[in-house]
Length: 310
Image 1 (cartoon, helix red, strand yellow):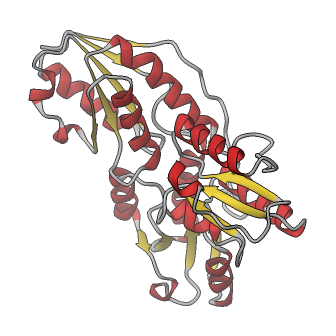
Image 2 (tube, one colour):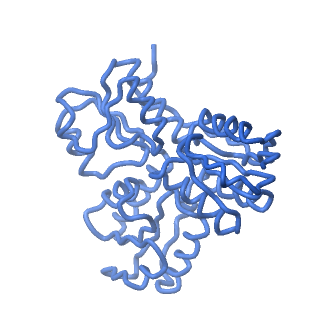
């Protein structure tokens, strides 16, 4: 059975998730319950349930929100149509869209004015993708993998730009961008890649962790894109990997022949869940915990105006 747990560094909450949760908690403290949130604020069951207990109500349709209520957009961002409808309905609105997602939206708007069409690399149906594609009425084409690149039919190819979902696999995205460039050599790439620093750092940490352990556990909810990418990455590197929403999901059979267990967490998974997984692994026989060296993240994003507590 397991003798050592190796912790990836960094892991868990990123600055965008911290900010989104803070926005909901500050709104509750300032305006009282209930506060309405469009879509899960971040993709984590524990976080969502905790905020529900504090007075947040999660909705998908704006028609579910009463007039005059306080509404928060999730960290994934929303389409222009949703923004406009929310304003027309007269809600008090706070936008918890991650600033790194907003950066992609700003770039889209700027290049769209210059006549560009876009190829967006991302996962169909993910709220971030819906929000980003919803910044434009037309001229944005979604590709999920290399085979999709051959099917794209832009209206013109002189002005074509690539944007990506911020939580993709860095390696997968690079492969798809290469296919796009092979088909459309003129294509414009983002000045800085759209995949966010936290996604990149957590994937780099898993690349360091995986070869040193017999099994990798990723703490994250099934809907969390960046958590799924961490599990897939460890698997691809040849280490059996499992994703768990909480310690209750751990299966002792995974660790029967494991001397070392690697542990990480997606950017929307709180540290309390990591600590519970560590405790469960100790119950199963782990005797020590060691944190690997890694990047120390110090980025913090400010809250929107009107949410500072007096």
